Image (cartoon, rainbow, N blue to C red; front, side):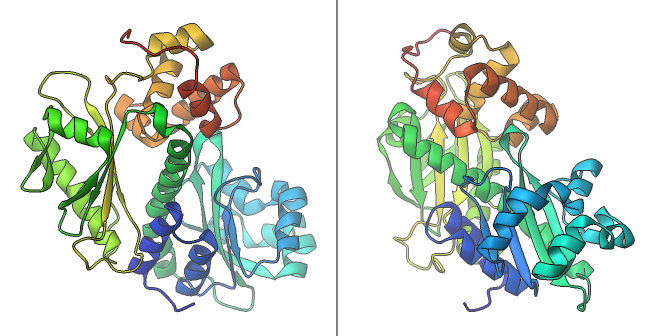
Amino acid sequence: MTELTESELVGLLYDAALGRTTWSKVVEALGQLLDCSSVYIGDPQHVSSDIAAAYRIPARFLELYRTEFYKHDPWAMGAARLGVYNKAQRGSDLVDDLVFERSIFYNDFLRDQNDAYHLAGALVGRPHGRSLIVGCHRPKALEAFSDEALAQLDRLLPHISRAADLHQSLLIAHDTLDQMPLGAIQLNHEARLLHANEAARHILKSEDGLEIANSHIRAASRNDDQALQRLIAGAIEISNGYAARDGGGFIRISRKSGKIPYSVLVSPVGLDRIVLSSSSPAALLFVSDPTAEGVVRPNDLRELFDLSPAEAQLVVGLTEGKSLRDIADLNGVSISTVRTLLQRAAAKTETNSQRDLLRLVLGSPRKWTGRG
């Protein structure tokens, strides 16, 4: 595999999120970029996780890690104990080198397997209190990761997190799209409209906060439009091979009618490879109308599943395409509070994942009506 630049790796992440390449190619590119002897991205507590890939780590080694040694991993335990999430760290920042060298994890596992001693890694927060481990390794004989390597990984982490959110959202949408009032819009590298599905065309035709102006998607509110155009521009930069830390994201678009705002997710399409053609999509917009027929209502969720008001509002937010981080920011609470609410909602609905929870809610026999 040809070594990619940081910008190209960002694009590759979104290619993987959209299913256009594999996560294995992502970890290989990350290993080459940071000069790693091995790389792992995954959730060892959930082997069925949709995102799991390794570079230069044998399958038998991964199986041993999942089944026997994950619970002894001083790096992961150190990050969790310190509450360090979504931030690149050296292994020595998480556990003292002498303590690490005396650990079961190093002596009975790492040293005999691939002599991974130096770490540049992070815990990326995921739904249901889970974490995605991102670990880049080097043997003891080599130098520890430099400040620049940590800075590079730190710049990549928001994209890893966002790509994981997008990947999960698309998996959910694939299962439930016919039940969701979800508009899908494709824009080219000049931000001009390429395609809109039926739900999106209905939203745009109503001109109630979102509309088409000179083949561009615009928001009626000036502030909303400025924010929307920044997200679109950042997404297109990523698709064209330029790293943008804030490329894409979530935004609420206010409406002229005063109805509940639209929820809009803006995403790059990945590199696939460099977007040059005016007919190639460079950004995707997913638009949810919370007032459309078929939308889940908080009161219905409370009646059906005995959810608390906060739990019901959380589930409604998820059906609108919001991430846990979006919901925390919108409600002014911590991400840990939102994860706790999600765990409680999952327990009450007897589901084991966010995907299963949304499939249950959106497939409920209750006909969602206009009650709030």
